[in-house]
Image 1 (cartoon, helix red, strand yellow):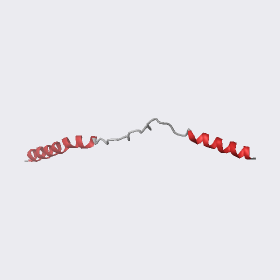
Image 2 (image 1 turned 180 degrees about the horizontal axis):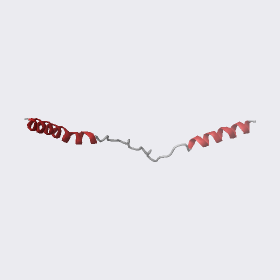
Image 3 (image 1 turned 90 degrees about the vertical axis):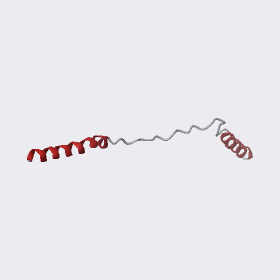
Image 4 (image 1 turned 135 degrees about the vertical axis):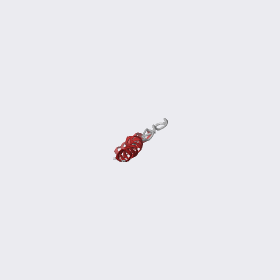
Length: 62
């Protein structure tokens, strides 16, 4: 019985002794997602065009 307990203790100690290694852990960089705002760049041209169309309509109405 003592041999069985000793064998179990030795196998448990041997399996945990080699659990780690000396190499550096691999750490992945976080992924950064940039949201593009395509509507804001095209919206910059619509406002002056709309104002130009309103001015043209006012001038044409006179």
